[in-house]
Image 1 (spheres, one colour):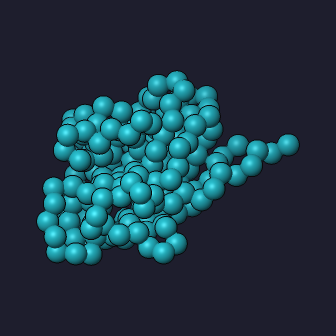
Image 2 (cartoon, helix red, strand yellow; image 1 turned 90 degrees about the vertical axis):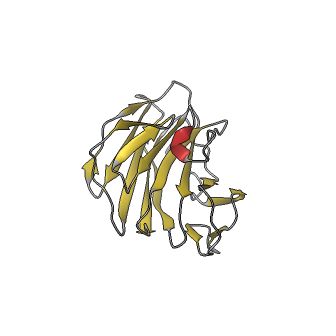
Image 3 (tube, one colour; image 1 turned 180 degrees about the vertical axis):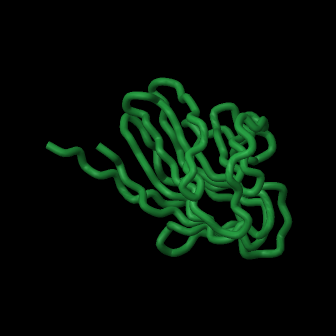
Length: 174
C-alpha cells in the first residue's frame, strides 16, 4: 500500500518575520517594503522526517543581494545573525555567493550562482542515507550528511526589498 502524500509545503505565517509577506496561497515569500533589516527569515509548515523528499525554491528575484534557501533541523536555530546558515543545525545555499553555509562558514564554495532568478532544487533523504543535496539550475552541489533521526524544516532568509522566493514541486519520493 503506497504511503500517503504529505500536505503541500507552505510558508508558515507564524514563523515569518515582518515585513516579509506570504502570498494568499502560502507558496510565495516576498519583501516588498523599504524597511531595512539585517536578515528576515521564514520557516515552512513542513516538519520532514523518515522519508525521501524533493522540492524547489524558485528564486523569482534575487534583487542583487544575498539570499539563503535551505533547511534547519527541529528545533529551529537561526543563529545569532538571523541568517539561515548561521545556526548549528542549519544549511543555506547562498544563491548570490554560490556557497553552502552552516554556522556562518561556507563549507562548499565556487558553486553556481543566481544573478537574477533561478531554481534551487532540494533532495532530502531522511530514510536511508540521511543527506541533503542542493541542485542549482541543474547542477548538483556536494552532499551534506545529516544526523540519523533528523527532522528538517525547509526555510529561507531574505536580505533586501524586492527579493521573492516561491516553493514549488514538493513531493515525497518512494
